[in-house]
Length: 434
Image 1 (tube, rainbow, N blue to C red):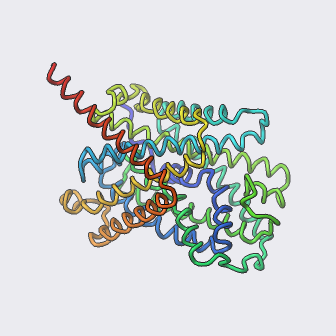
Image 2: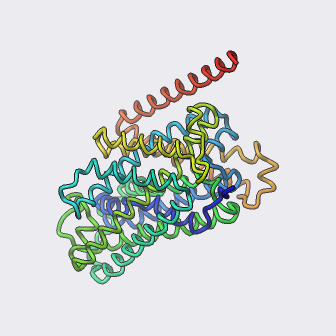
Image 3: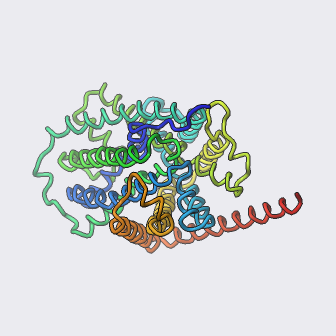
């Protein structure tokens, strides 16, 4: 039998780094500079500090309960299967939209090489491609991920190192042109860049030696991610562009064109495509496992719980997640709203994770006491409370600024409750007949 634990330390690092950084690093820092000015560096420091809380929570749950579809497993065990399903239901709706969003991000850059290419077809095509790759096993997925992450990290490093000589300290003044409030607004948006760390829970069952590799892998990934966002933000803040970044479609690319030779611009575009692809690849790897475990719990159709005999991958779950992502792309909806609704879903997941984390010492006392990796009980509860407060505050900020998002999330919850209730009734009815 093929060993299902195929992801080692560097597999974690490359998978998480690719998922978290992705294409957003080529767009988001510039948007945050328009909000906070050069104080974007302070905003990322604040966002990074908040992300440490997420990493601690992920490390504790990921080492204590390493499993495919770890969010459902953890919340079901620490709260109840009902809340586990609802959390994952909202999460799946969110990450399907994330995949559509990133697919369109990939399409925005692939037209650099193929100007006449239809963007919708390009977005759907890249998602379908990595859906097929994922069917052939997590070992192959990690190989693709490693190659693509190396490519875009090299180009990010070149961009930062060649951009620093163009840096002018005078462009950093005033440091905080829009006040302290703008820094926290940018920090809130910057924090969304770090939401992907918690995705590690979804493929925890495929990680070798999780007690050692999960915390170390998260720590290395965090350092790479924070350095990448900080470095890009520093270069963009210190270079005179002559116009606001808000008027740029591809800010990093447009700034790079002022000091990169033409051949290096082509390499940069390739690296941006690789960055987008790593996020799509990581999404399919992680969240198809949620479909798998919900099917194993007899809430989704049983066929989605089946695994490939040869590759040991949940091929039907992968196909389902991939096709749902393609369907989202084909709707042609407002992609910016995709991103905002997706962020709400990810934040709601963190609320459930926070409550679950808080309950670990009481519900899993023996397992926690004997765990190879464990947080101090006081620190664990502080982390849980901070994660809950941070997530709740961001949700409040988003919903209060646009009530439509609140109604969308309520609608998703209602549909989820109906699906859960219907599946339980159907299962009970089939048992009575049998």
